[in-house]
Image (cartoon, rainbow, N blue to C red):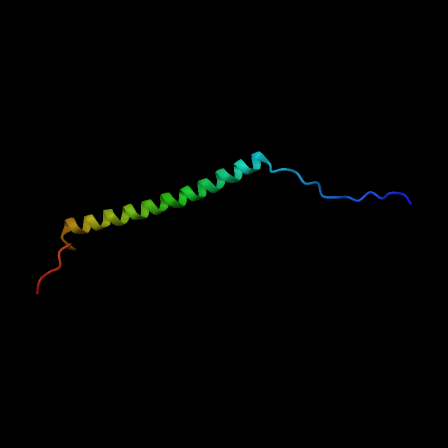
Length: 64
């Protein structure tokens, strides 16, 4: 019997360039989401102090 050649998937190690690109992409996405969170918090704080300065809100409960 003649030996048959069987095509096997060749396992290769991880691609360093691909891993670096994926890491950079994930880092940029996570950093962007974190930055958007901080911008939203900063906007809320700025809006609170603007309303406080205008006298529309107060931080002390009014007595009845």
